Length: 447
Image (cartoon, rainbow, N blue to C red; front, side):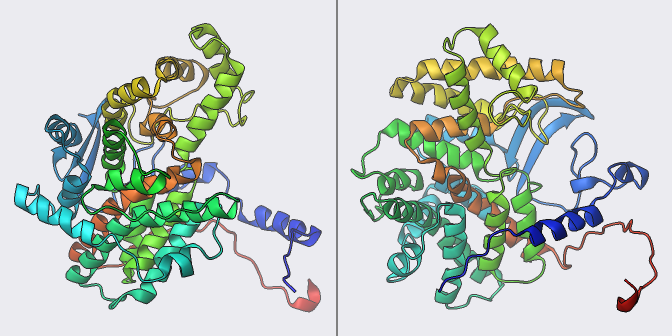
């Protein structure tokens, strides 16, 4: 008989003692000059390494400036501008740039895209034996399970040479969309819905294939595919200092295998403080729309936002989700690039009024936060502010919001793993200052 243990009074009692013995006084961080979370009071990250892969620019001459994001030295705005103006999709080109370190020629891009298309396959019976078995209601868990299982199918799972890790990286970049979508299809089927598994089309790009595999009729518009492709490009990498990319480098530095590294990165991204922010934005806006009947009434919207900050609305956490960022204090370039395409998609979907509501919140929130909070730097809308709205318009189920982040970020993780293998020679080992007082051992009979 299966035994499922629930929380007992004993669990609660020992947990209370655990909390008591693990609580560190907040003022210790100032007293001992320890940067909690590898960040100072202004949110600046402690420099722990060097990278060629990407750069986040949020200050100039020590002062906050409009944010910029660079992939391998190229401004993301320029990358997007060029593939959009040429009416091309950008995922494959940007993936090549981040992995290899240089822009591909036309022939190199064609060959690289064909290579990814050829690798969009899973081992025989993998869908039936792994993905369909014990589906989870959290797709990030399903993704991690699939990634760890792929270890058993690899001809050289432990090899850490650059050619072997490159092979594994290309495989995973190609397979992630399938693993994410099929995991959702299996979960949906477990909830009583019809099951359908559409194979990817080798003639289509990554964004197109995601929509093709997800939708029962496999249909989508060009605009839908372009916006999803753009979302993947903008989420692909972010400066190396984010939690999951840092996790990738920390675990890689131990010398372990690719599958263990990517499972660890997925575990990091799964956390709501990292990859789940756009879900909160969508839920917050759903609550706003229920409580503010006239979306054009800016006073009513402002009142709702104040109630959020006062912990009187939505989840009572005191946050306006999608506003504020650990690095950017003037503007998030990803949100700025994204916004114009979101507007076009909203028009196509007949949701322009909802888009206008987003722009009202985008304008009012920073001002209200400045009035209500003591902040050390400015706040602005981040890319998560619009990405959840986009996924909602594309008909993506909320269970796939964070996995879509992973489908993009697997490229950045792979690039950081390769760079760590090539450039680093030591295991990453941070230090913690001990603050527990010395104690004399008490024999068991005397306790």
